[in-house]
Image 1: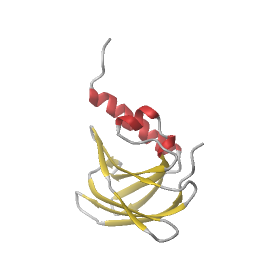
Image 2 (image 1 turned 60 degrees about the vertical axis):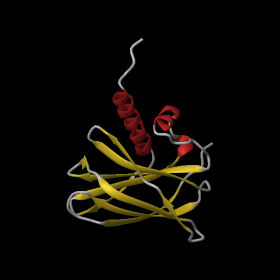
Image 3 (image 1 turned 90 degrees about the vertical axis):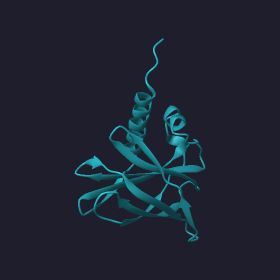
Length: 146
């Protein structure tokens, strides 16, 4: 039996993760020459193999936030800070992990949440090229997983 090189497996997993994110309502904001794409989904909705390849725990009580910074349609590296506030105004920092495969780079972070709770996200994105930092704020209810 032939095994695929790890980079091919991880590239495929990243594409599946991105496709899973696209199935949910992805959002974006434009700043100068950059587009910041972002979304939050329950980790329980991720494909098990994809979640495992990135060390993401699938759970009904955990969500994943994913950020991708594009310049001219191409992903670029950035410094990314993620914060989330619940309705009690408690701010939690979410550690961002860079996920890089070939020319694609995104940033992901997981956090605990209450299903269908509306959350206020605060992103600070600073591309490693010119421009920034850019602040993105959005409110999103992360659905529960059945």
